[in-house]
Amino acid sequence: MTQEPAGFDAQRIGRWIERRFGISDYDVEVMSVGRSNLTFTITVDGRPRWVLRRPPLGHEGGSAHNVAREGRIMAALSDSAVPVPSVLDIVDDPEVLDVPFVFMDHCPGSPLNTPADWAELPETNRRDCAFAMVDALAAIHAVDIDAVGLSDLRRPGGLIERQLRRWLGQVEAIAMRETPAIHEVHDALLEAMPDPAGSPVGIAHGDFKPNNMIFSPTGAVNAVVDWELTAIGEVLTDLGYFVAMLTVPEEYTSIWVPRASDGFPTTAELIDRYQEVSGHEVHDVGYYSAFAMWKLACIREGVYTRLATGKMGDLDLDPEVAGEGVEDLARQALELLERS
Image (cartoon, rainbow, N blue to C red; front, side, top):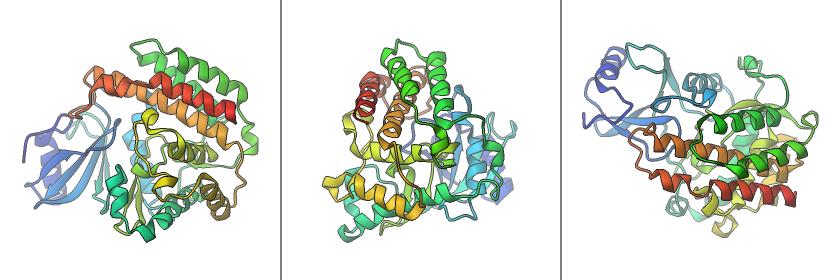
């Protein structure tokens, strides 16, 4: 094996892989995407074979990094219409690793991280690819929570109310600097919060965007990944987040996504497709988009803190670069809220 990356105990994990799968010769590398839980690709004979996902180093910050929970959700969805990676094991054994981890089959395909990734799709398939994302989102929201065994994820109260409280609390618990805009937008969102009783409830992915899906060369969605922020609640929060990622300037999100100028459908077309496929009447998208950008600002502040304190393993990312624009992102959320 090549040099051992931080967060991957090659000796102990290697013994487990040999016992479990009878293979001792492999290589491992840190995935190039992901800024929260640590994700490793394990290759055998030069080909990707498995993926291991674990919490960040010095794990802090609550259930957002609970990979065992994330693995359980993916496993529960394996027989549904939602495309997910194949979970082989959820391991919570300090003899193997000091934190729990999820071990999955490697899913063929690639995410959409850059314009070059989008350009590799046949031009005639790009709109179909975009609508396939919406169809995958509708499939998530259509899941019968009780039938797949996830009813215990329900929590009292509305999802927005819970997450406003939770994300602000996490920022206050770990932030190394003042974040006045995050607090200001929190208060504005709380005041303008829609009545949760008027929104459809189901599984909300929590981070649904193109680079959290794995696509085939023709643009089909092979898998939806990164379920660490999943919760039960108002599903239109996902649609608001998806739409916001496609419209808020990249300079604020630091995440490239295809836009209408790249051949992606317009926001109105995407919403129409979602309503058609899901059967849900869409409302308050501007509010849910604003909430999504505020949540992203909170997440980005947490990433900055973990990078600055050396808890993100071998990810090659400058903490100051990651921390830039948190306040601007929160201000962008306020603009979205005011326009809604």
